[in-house]
Length: 153
Image 1: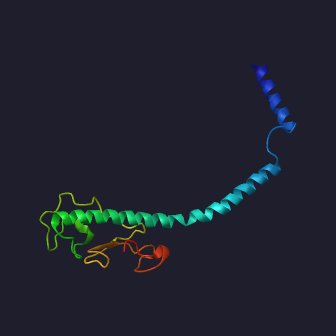
Image 2 (image 1 turned 180 degrees about the vertical axis):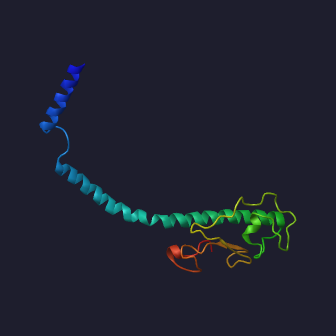
Image 3 (image 1 turned 45 degrees about the vertical axis):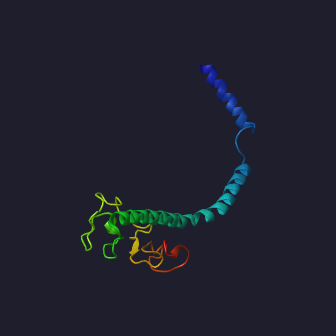
């Protein structure tokens, strides 16, 4: 057994010392240069993606809230008032008009915040539809363009 280990060590030493195994400095530099070029091409494209993901998440949330509002309207016969707001989807409103057929357990488990950590906005009456649900976007204020644009209206 000891003889076998000595033979393996000798063969390994011979390959490395003869230049038959391992990478040369030039090969390592070429590989690092290729990795650097790939990183320079890929990183700028990926860096803008978090904003796109947040916008997509906001649109998904708004779609879910709109579906809950439609269910609320089917049960109650109208949308929550501006005063009742979106909280009427989670807890039974105590402000007039108090809904009679409000679904036990509510229409949403919880009211989400937009991906920037702010509450979604609700207007009744809406400007684009009977009611509007929207996020002010990354800049957290009305209007804006690009990633700062309002989402949902």
